Length: 372
Ligand code: SF4
Image (cartoon, rainbow, N blue to C red):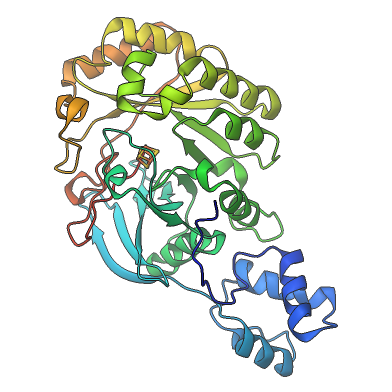
C-alpha cells in the first residue's frame, strides 16, 4: 500500500538524475541531458535552496524550474542541545506532521578538542506500525512513510543548521526503514553517489527490527552500507514478547537472512542488544548471543535501557527496567570471553531525552523514540 502523502507538490529533490531528466522534459521538452546533470549536482552536491542559485543554467530554464518545481525544505519546529553536545531536531513536514533527527557527537576528540565523529540519526517513517514494547514511537502507530526527499533533507537541514560536517549516518530514528523500502533505497543511492561526494556508503548503517525477505533483497542492492539487526533477545519466547514482529519472523529466519546479507555483501553484521534487568541479561543470554554473533564477522552493540514515561506500561512493557552496572559489565565480559567484538553504547543526549530508545518530545502530541 502506498502510504506516501497524497499531495507532495512538484519536487525535483528526491529524484535521481534520470528521473530529473524525465520530469523536466515532460514539462519543458528537449532539455539536454547535461542540463539535468547540472541540476542534479546543484540540488545534492551544492545543496542549492533555490533555482536562482543555479547560475550555470540559462535564466530562462531557471525561471521555468522556479515556476514548475518546488525546491523543498523541512521546517525546524524545535531544537534541544544536550550537555554532551547531542542535538535533537524536531522537523515539521509539508503536511504538518513531525519527525525527529538527532546529531550525536562521539566522545573521541581530536587535538583541537573537536569530536571526531558526528553521527546523524535519521527517521524513515512518521511513527511506526511495529509494536516494540520498549519504544515510544510504537504508540504513534504509522502515520505515513517519508519520501526520499524528506529523508535526504534531514541530512541537509542538520548540516545547514549546525554548520557541522556529518561523518556517519544511521537509519535508526522513527520507523522501520525496510518497511519504507523504495524511498530508503532511493535516499541511500543519492546520499552515497560518489559523484555527489556527500557521504561514503561505509559510513552509513541501516537498522532493522528484522524483516527477512527485505533483508535478503537489500543484500542484492549493491549499495555497500552496513546493516544492523535490533535483536534484544536470544529466545523466540522473549523476543516475541518484546518485538511482536518476531512472531511472524522468528530468530532462526532472521539469522539466515543476516547470513545471506554477509554472504552477498561481505560487510560485517551489527547486532543491537538493549539490556533489560532480569529478562535478557544472564550469562546464558550472553553465550547464546555470542553463538549468534559468531555465525559471521560481526560486532554487538550493547545498549543501556533508558526507562521513559512513554514506555508502554502494560504487559511486558511494565517489566522493563535498566540492568544494574554490575550486570552490564558482567554481560559484556562474558561476550568478550566468547570472542565477540563488543561495542558499548554511551548514553548520548540522555538529559534531553535523545538517548537510545528514549527520544521523546513533550511538545509533540505523540511521543517519539528512536530505535537503536
Ligand atoms: S523499535 Fe523501531 S521497529 Fe520497533 S516500534 Fe520502534 S521504531 Fe518501530
